[in-house]
Image (cartoon, rainbow, N blue to C red; front, side, top):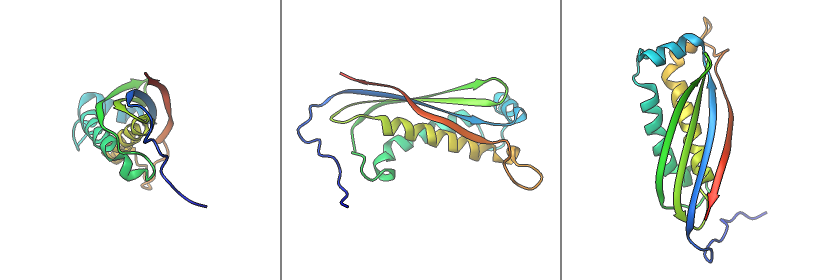
Length: 146
């Protein structure tokens, strides 16, 4: 079996946009610490947003057959859902020969992993385990090509 990057040499450069989302389930006490800005490591959403933007730029390094494309826009939004979940939504845009779905998904996953890292101190049980913490629902919610 061979491995190769898909040839996009003869495709036209067009506007591309992808939006992805994902969720992290946390203890409601941890959510309150985030809302109140009392997480010891710092501003959770700001740090996670910077990490997500950096991850978009590194996507071809993480996903070997993903093309290196000129990203023109990245935004990441956070929303507390209910009392125990955070929703992360990333939007990525480029004018390119291929789409930006992998970049949007990478942004979401990087943000979620950084949230976990920043609050893990508060999520551990007495045995050092994470029985409440779950990353879930990572998916592409829309893509545009024109």
